[in-house]
Length: 103
Image 1: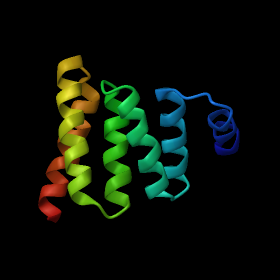
Image 2 (image 1 turned 90 degrees about the vertical axis):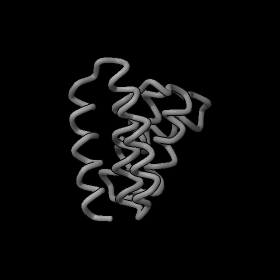
Image 3 (image 1 turned 60 degrees about the vertical axis):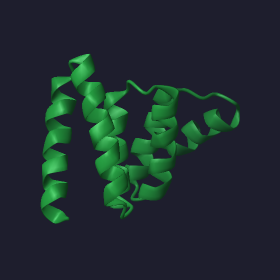
Image 4 (image 1 turned 45 degrees about the horizontal axis):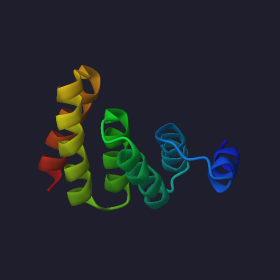
């Protein structure tokens, strides 16, 4: 799957959904820094993509950047609240609480 998404990107296709797919794929594959790159681009393309903010926070946390994760989740929480995305709001609230206990 990652290979075909990377081919699309190389051919000049770029979209929030494509970047989200790449970010999720790389995170699932254990490459958190690369996942974070794609997810950052995803939220640049669509700042209202609450699921991407949530995943960006996870990628940054996995990459050893708890401050970046906190910021992503805080920004994502604002988006989720504004858009009424209750599930993402709940999850990011939990992630932030856990992060607060760790640091």
